[in-house]
Length: 196
Image 1 (cartoon, rainbow, N blue to C red):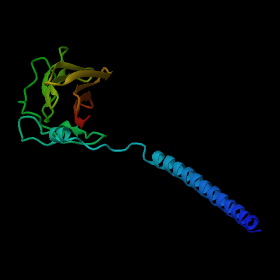
Image 2 (cartoon, helix red, strand yellow):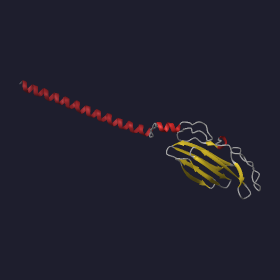
Image 3 (cartoon, rainbow, N blue to C red):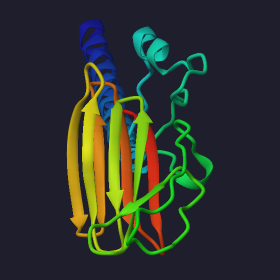
Image 4 (tube, one colour):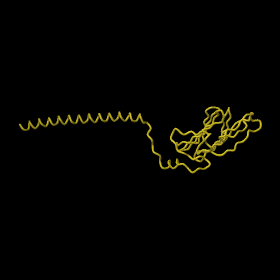
């Protein structure tokens, strides 16, 4: 009699234990499915995780002492754009137009008036950026690069958008210097320094 009663109790205990195990597995599956759903929403909301800078990158991004070129200021994309009216990469003496050129006054932001070769006025300017030096020649019909010299570790890339707008980029593993020149009722340029 006792063995039959204890066998019945054991069967009841096993049944209860099976219910507890089934409930535990169902709860774990529900929690896992919920976490996967929440994680996909979080990944969709913030797809780009920021990565910390290494010590070498931070040293390279630190501002330097003032020299003839503007100091590098680190920035995050999108890069900052500085109009040439507020930028003076180096002092450039203004000159008067050559004989036969129109008497248009040179802009006061570093552009030098030169003859365009057909009786009009063009403008020339040297830009010194972290990635190198570039000289532009601009008139109302055309923008040209007179000379581009990359600094050590940088490679120059020319991008022509149309006949009146051109960009020179100096690219290295950790930095990009860009100079964009165009004609906007006069010579116009933008200088962009950004961390790669």
